[in-house]
Image (tube, rainbow, N blue to C red; front, side, top):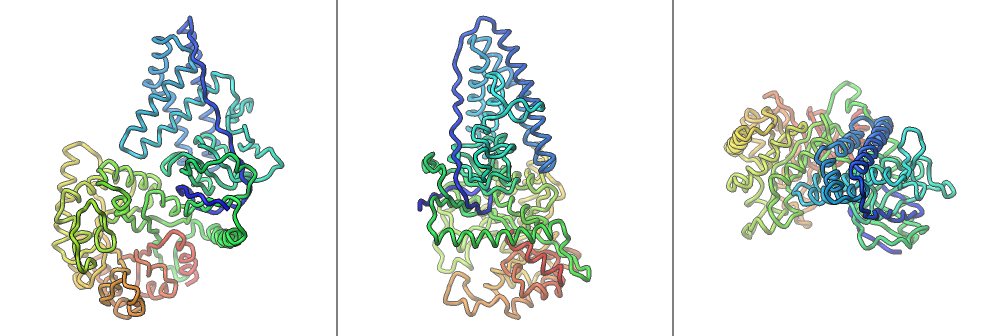
Length: 559
């Protein structure tokens, strides 16, 4: 057995035979031409044909996956119709007197390099898109066939191994596709009945190829790099789209374990089919909003796949934890905006920076603390280092123009902390107004209830904010005076303690007295043994891991 670690871009498990796609040779001969105008006319005609092909592909994707998922190919058409792109191609033809194919390839390389050099990971991912649309034009110029043409007369590069909509040619079997890379248009044409999963050497979680894989429900892993081996063709493999692990020639124990996991996943999928789109409502009509917790932008796909109604906790600190230097405003805006756009109208509640205690970052240069759980962390860092906090708030406000974002403040113990945070938020709003940058002026602000102090002050806090979200992990720790990182205290740190449940009840009652909603975003929210208790207490929202959404909805609907 050979184990390969890649980057997860689409969750799920696939077990099957590998089909390796040979890398497509995009070599283009450079030819000097005598008639630049004729060559420009060739380019324009090829571009128009490529635009028509993309229109057909867009319509195919819209019919199967919905209009919002087809917008990618509208963007591809706009790329081809961009005057700057055409000017670059035609300029190369006129100045260098080169053939249209070579000019298109050169222009694609220039634009791809420009995108790749940008700070935004979303814009970096567009480098692959400009190469994809340019390849389509080159294919037309070279007389290659493409399967998306309306008359059915042409077929794309992906058909080289028979993986597009007419199915895998060889024995009609389903395969796990291994490739150096896959373009978005190739991915959109995959026959889901014949493709079990995708593994690529190149690519990123932000690429349109990755987004399409998630949309299509295909387990996908990227970034295996030099571990990509064409000799794997025909071998059995297991891919774990959640962990990013690939097992080639798996041993019996691995096969048995993943067959078990796959069966569990299929049972979960059956539950999804039964409950998707159904309200999270008890038989008596009590409505509960059921959201999901995430740590990274790529997790949003799992939220949608499990039919959560929104994101109740986006742990923004992971944008800091996974870097070696400060995340810039642009980097954060890109991450928050990506999630907001992917979630559409569904709420996205983003917790502001919660560094400290068990989450340490070297470049913060925090001093050693004997008791970090009670130390310099979360909102305390933000309020004493406002230059860090304002960068995040500006990014959050800018992203709020692209979706339904709310801001949640962690580790609050006093009303003054909330007012100080709101003052810095107002400063950020004022700056953006001055810069004529759009944001949601009425963005909602909430606080996490994690300490006995915040529970005791809940009435006063409720007058300052739009919602409460109870972080039961820390609330249990601080209520019972039990360090959650100390395994020897596990028997004493009982989240079912009457003291903890009383804290939750007091918080819900205070919220409702002041007309705001109250949710739970800690692990306790997914504890099915407490669902009845939370319903009885009148909880408004529960935010849990994406895979816990459907089992919890099932219990609530049967209550």
